[in-house]
Amino acid sequence: FHQTLKFIGWVEEDKLETVKDKLKNLKFRSFKAKLDSLSAYPTPSNIRVIFVDMIAPDIFPLHDDVERFLEGFGKKDSLFSTHLTLGRVKLCRERNKFSEVLKSIKIESKEFVIDNVNLFQSIPTKEGSIYHKIQY
Image (cartoon, rainbow, N blue to C red; front, side, top):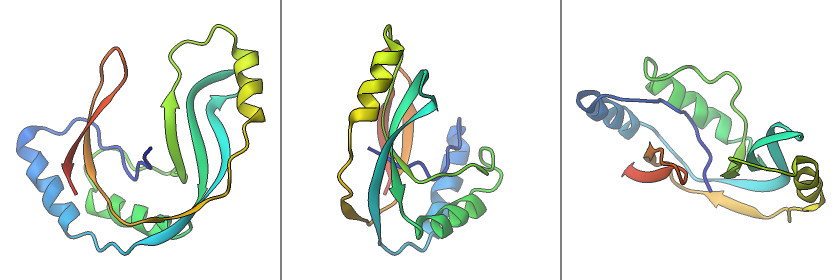
């Protein structure tokens, strides 16, 4: 599970050190978050991503700092939302049934601590993305 603070896309090898150096300046203090409800994107009839909405007001200043530190890398994310991505849907033959099953799942409102920020490389494959931790 992960919460993307900023997707920066392709970074050339010689600029990767700059990204890592900028993120080292990130002042991060742990904070609490709480699971909310199961959701899907973009629509219930065309589900591509399944995620759990998260209540985490303290993540917004962290997101703003990451945006500021990494200005010039990737696009500015004006639609940032707090969520934990559970998975992606490549093919679904029975969309309505799948949507109904997702609606029936209730998420227990668990509270937890977010205590680190990591930089990952996402490597797309036919089976799905492989994530490689670059910095933590």
